[in-house]
Image (cartoon, rainbow, N blue to C red; front, side, top):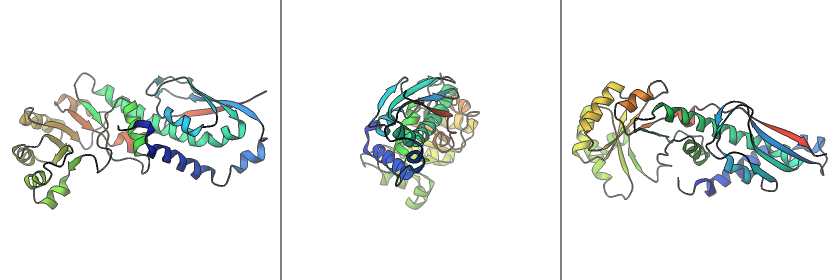
Length: 276
């Protein structure tokens, strides 16, 4: 994805998260901990996971000594230390929750994505994300998908055309919608819900078809009808239990909203060690 972790929207997301949590000050830490106290701390995986969000740590701990002991997308086992930080004890305690929130969310997405990617191994089908993301955190979450081995679909409404059923209705039909989208300088994909719409889209020159809520059997027939004339993508109700069947139907892609809207957060701890 363009600009990756260096994108200004990601830095802004971190700044907003810190401001949201700290507000006018960490009253608990300021009351309990001496201003000059030094400490170190470490991040610990509490379950097997694919770690993601590590590039956010230097943005959060921008005054501390930070050591990463794993790389983005690495598989971790329960009990593994993957990052350490050293600095003022007050700062480490104040920044703890924001760092954990990002790491737990991103690693959860990466871990679920990896499960889908493993499920379709050997088929040639690739796993795509969607725009079903947490508002304000889309780039973070899509980068977490990439860390898990998935492929990023469009970032937003601005970088690709995806003609959905309501666009087709508003435009006056499949062919009319495709004709209106010609020569726009961005990729064009169209959703089809029936074989009739599929045939019409192909006859109008569609290059990328989104097969919406097809069963694996109908998807197999759809891929056969397409015959390589366009890329095929399956969407709608794809689960870990069904994704292999869709991939084996011959689809080029499966898009899975659950990667970002339903991934459970990973269990990660931060442990503080006061300096002696």
